[in-house]
Image 1 (cartoon, rainbow, N blue to C red):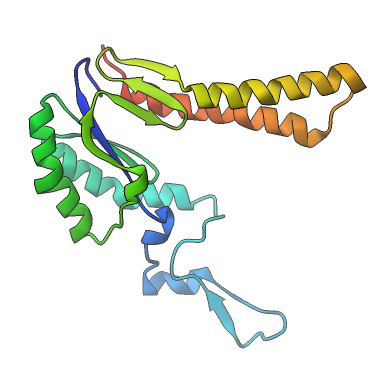
Image 2 (cartoon, rainbow, N blue to C red):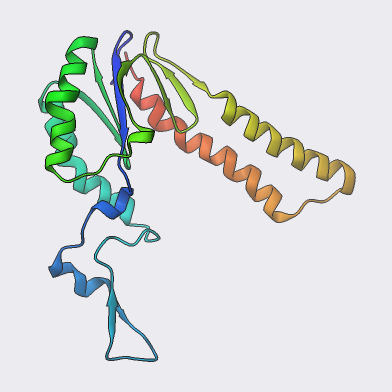
Length: 195
């Protein structure tokens, strides 16, 4: 998707999944009754965060938006509630942000988390613990991520050395950090794929 020398901006949707309202016709499938008050129904008007289908639904709901941006000759990459927009020309990307990208999000009533968004075109994106250098299409792990993983591994190794045993939560913590790196690497690699 990215080519060496591309420029990028990125944004993060505020409140992620909660920006999608549940259609009134689907609410009956998102309800439950309390055992204490069976006649009283409770339900969600936004997708429940804990459901395994919510990420899939969220991505499917935003797929037409991504397609629209791509039809506007703008490379668009979406990973859940994170978006990155790429373009060959820095100045053109700046104009697209002001004239197309931000107005479309506003028109669709999608709130942007400004503190996590970067609207000034750059050739270095930091996403999910990876630094993506668009000048050369290189992906590296951030120092912060490297230190967190190294610290967790060292703590586990020390526990095993000193006690010859470790709590399950320590092993789970290390495993979680390593698996998160693996899960984050695939979209980062897709963003920088070029052949």
